[in-house]
Length: 73
Length: 484
Image 1 (cartoon, chains in turn red, orange):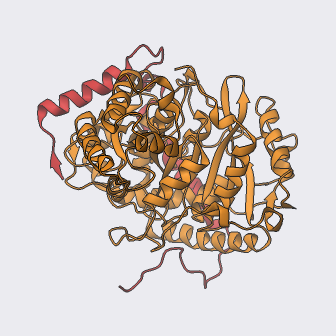
Image 2 (image 1 turned 180 degrees about the horizontal axis):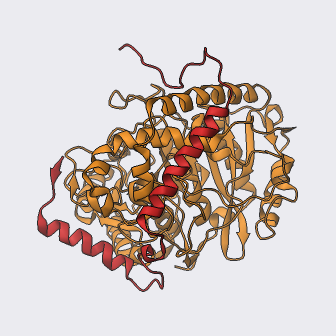
Image 3 (image 1 turned 90 degrees about the vertical axis):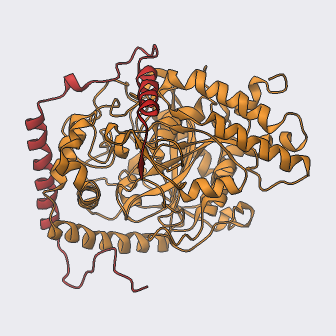
């Protein structure tokens, strides 16, 4: 992977910004409406915990192997 | 462009191919007209990541050279298309819709782009997308380097995600077809919201080499078109074995709906709970009319429901475990904070909490899901369900109330009767089991398109396409055009 030169990068970002501002009547960013980052991270971690506890409650026979398995090639 | 009029932007792949063959216009004229249209109109929908005009015109001249000598490489020869900006294309940025990757350039094209190039298709632009395909669980449609994907049917509405630009561009006639990708809903949702026909192929049928990885065991690449026929032609070109994709199934695909089984031999499964009473008033008429039309096609009908599993939790844990590993450097370096959507940032960071036990447990439950769904397909050949029960939401609206890290926004509330599972979780279930699905427009709720989905067992795309083709022979929803 190689990096893009500064001029091309500026052009790309300007294209995106212009597109977002092109009279759509829709704001490009709504991040100001979002909760503080710490609250969001805590909520996301709670979601992982909820998923973990849902899966822990699911009965799983010992013989069940994971859906993707190593293959010798 | 004297020979290229407005109607050309809405032609099917076969129609464009025929007109090029009849020399009604040259491929260069066609390509210039599409590039002009893409560059002037795509910003209205925030659909364009980068125009590839120069490369496209160069390619078009090669196509014209071929055509002059009577060479037709495929039905896609000379047909202009767009690709989601998670697919590598050399010499230009491949941004994955995300600021931390805005300057990223690859040396080699993605396998699907190379295959389309070999078939003579002309790539005119990279199309916008939700940043990192929404892998952290985004809250707002604005989670993209290009801003929120806007719907050609109503620019105050979202085009769906994460293949937002692919949805908008094809719906607005800016490209004849586009490539999208799906980890959980990212082809089906924007196709349904924008009134397109979209095909999520069987996992492993289409190579992901050169595509951004979000989840190695869930990612798929597929066509987003204006008809079933076009989906079949594109899939035939991009499918096939690829040693560069460890997930490749090693199978090819030949579009031959005429050889699908007789409709009277096909068993179609549906869940009455999906259609009776549980649908919102706005979308019910279109969806029920679609079901009635399918019921007149002579299939054997069976009532079914998805086996009972915690699909959402399994999908979130699998996706989170894989995405956390894939984007570990982005997350650990702090560059993740440059993403546009704070929920995405939080979701990605939380993935580092997923440990090997969590991931393996989810993958073991996934094995049970796969086995149960395989068993369900002993009794039916195809499932039918609403793609999404609601139409596109507002482009500024939050996509859910509670952050739920996953590859796609949580589905809107579905007021099905308590205990009636139906097929309403077909998107996470189908993605976990690697099933192919075809969504088609089936009417409108107000000004906005509504989509219906057919789902089948792995590698049964031709059956889906045969049924879809017959549906589109009997309806004209796929021919409706937004005012662009």
